[in-house]
Image (cartoon, rainbow over the protein chains, first blue to last red):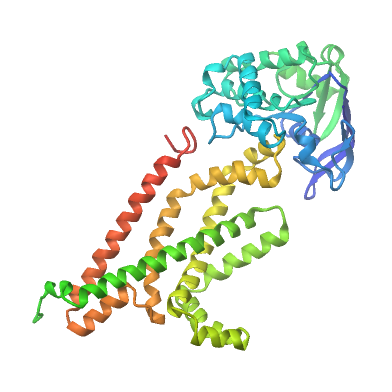
Length: 242
Length: 238
């Protein structure tokens, strides 16, 4: 589904990604973790072309993202993305946040779009907030709306860019629960996160990054029980002791 | 001081008519120029934020040119120099046959100058919306045009209502410069009344009061607009 091959990216002279290669198969959940500044978010933003890469290639469901003249708009409509800071459209109600792209990008009828929005909001327990603006919701609620907005497009895969990093601790679980459910429904997911409990529970593989390179890319159990690199050992010892 | 106060002069024939006509021309110039400024300013402001480098460069050049040349100089350039630069036939038409040449010239000069200032507000508004929302919109499947149409412009227009109020007030005040090319707007009419009647204090007081009233009216209108356009729970709004 997602194939990243020898991807390198520079900001000016500074190399942020070095020769990154990994794969996410259909139905697979891959967690990307690593210390801050290691290039996790940049990598995931390259997958749907929000960040251009200078070398290497990314193939998403047969579409070459890095190719010149690639139809990114069409591709992005089929890949859901959830951001650290939710990024809901602040001038629209929750209903419009979920309906706009369905109607304008997928050409669905108003009734169809609203029905879809209601179903999804019901699933994340936010039906009663459908007429509110995002500013009136808590962080956890906003992130659940953001996930629903992405799902409303019936995506073939979902990208999560630190979906719980901006949340109060008590709201993290309500968002993770939605993601766990999504994973068990068989959604293809690539998740940048520091939530190691989540990774352990649902990830098929863990990709560990440091300084712009992929240091480890292994099945979840192996990664947690016997990390190969010193860098990953060090990272895990710091993050798991809490 | 030996000054003959006579407030009544403002209400006598023909001076009252002159004032009224002056106010009408002031409104005509300011409002038409405002429409021109909004159209050009929005296009140029959006252009400066587009990914296309040539378009962004042209729009930046426009802003720097029109914002940095004094308005009075621009007024003179449009009125005295421009007709000499265009093809002969057109220049002759502008000088001889164009209806209301002072009005048209004042609107163009004031409108295009104010457009450069509006463009800056629009650009600032769009960048205040931020890369995060822009990315979210692209990730949601919207094209560049749709992102501007549904996300960036609706939000940024709401954000810039307060600074646009001050541009709107400024265009009324700046319209007084049109007197230098012979348009009999409010300031010019006051000057004329002062010259005819030697009641300069009264004439210019009238102009002052009228300008203040226009400003207050404009402020109130924009405040109402602000109340109806603000986004609940977003960036300093309630």
